[in-house]
Image (cartoon, one colour):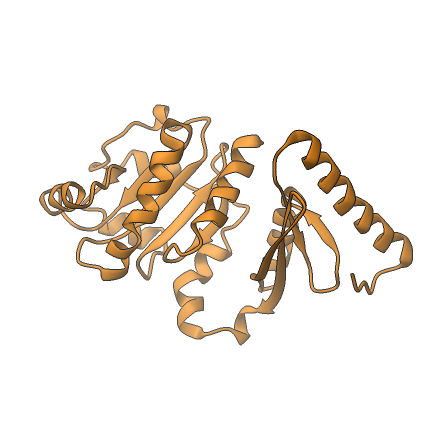
Length: 234
């Protein structure tokens, strides 16, 4: 491990990693940690705090490598300034990146006239939100991954889908693709108000309704599962 920090801090980071690996061995569970470019190792909760602080300076973290060492999953992270990233990507995801660590208006979503669920039923669980529309090819392509999450976590997690399409289109879409998420339909005003500028878009919220993750089209479903597991454990 290459480390540019003082020797004592480097030793502490080695100790954290070794401790996590040993602990996970006895608990028979995988432990997720993050490795920064300077070699510093952060736990999942430490990394999310660090990521929020970096976003305040317009620095966005990107996972560059994932490997397993013993029973630990190590995600290597590279931080870049948003100004150096693809402008289309920043327009698409930037507003949601900047919301990480902030309260998300889940009650306002549930209060929409065309929501099929009640806010009281959402409390105390992580929430996964999918923004889509029914004729969007990437939205359709990610449905198997979305269904996998729903089938695995069932009532442990709130699964909400939001679209500007009408109820008739959504009913046909849901039946065709077995897309059994709680729905908010006819929601063009809501999606616009939430800063959604591209589809698909997926957000993950903690049990206390703080936005913790942003995903465009789902590719690495195992990574999303790890993020959900971390929220369920907290």
